[in-house]
Image 1: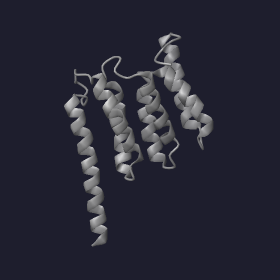
Image 2: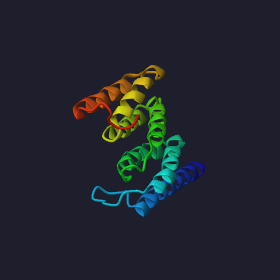
Image 3: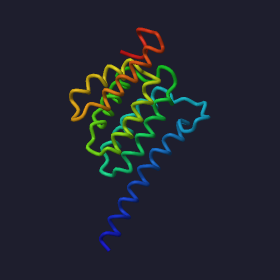
Image 4: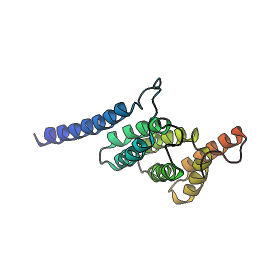
Length: 163
């Protein structure tokens, strides 16, 4: 009976967390590949800390799900809605979770960070390179830094993304 209660309470928490996220995104029109609405500055500033908090959730399903949500979130804001500080904080937080002991979580976080390469490749490259030495196994961070540097090179600009 106790096992059933724990299962249902975790399930309820997971569903509430996901509903919260989905409702916020639908309200701001940020979900969906065909969405033409872009999040405005105040929406972005209010939502990103809430999304990042979910990475510290005790439920691994919530943590993995939020990675995909954050990847979509990177593409949602109107141009200029994110400041370099906002991107930097998000990348720093994600890079901490790239060193998660669970390999499945590392892969989810890597996918999320890879989505950021299209928006701020120079910043991703710099921050991932710094993270290599601080991770238990810096291979994923190094791979991310190389992908981001390649994107910067492909764009052929010296000032791509935000510093």
